[in-house]
Length: 184
Image 1: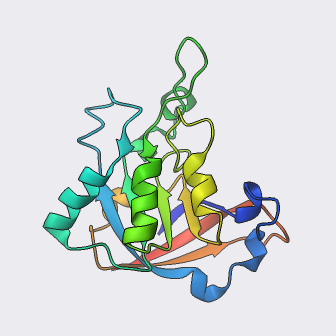
Image 2: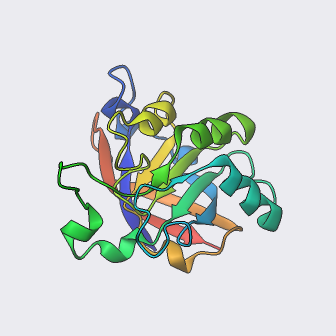
Image 3: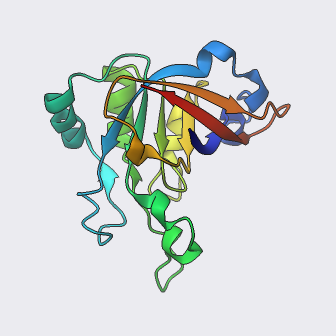
């Protein structure tokens, strides 16, 4: 069982749907896990963004990312939840630093792999330094899945996963805490 948070399109797009409009078939999906803990370099590369080379390298080992799946990014950040300063580290100028997806890789995954969404164990799918929330905006232009603050990604295999996402069905809600059942 995973826990986390699901963003809805209305959180970034005024004309977008609320959390209550996701249908059951949009919430039961195949998933893959890409582990970038090594790229974070023992917590010295907080601003690391998953890139296309990372995806191609992962696919050489595990096969092509299937269409219609959710790509879950394991950064190791969930182990920092107990300490707010570690989970949302700020520099002397107040800029927040944590890893995420690059806009380029997100566009690649959407167009070349036709994914259904993204998930991550950090505060957001956008790296902390992306104050424009470019990945969220891109993904939520349509009612795709954006999962954040996921727990237990370290317990999942890279492939062969089906996730069932259970949000609170808040009318016109911009997001919701979720329980995520991962079957593999």
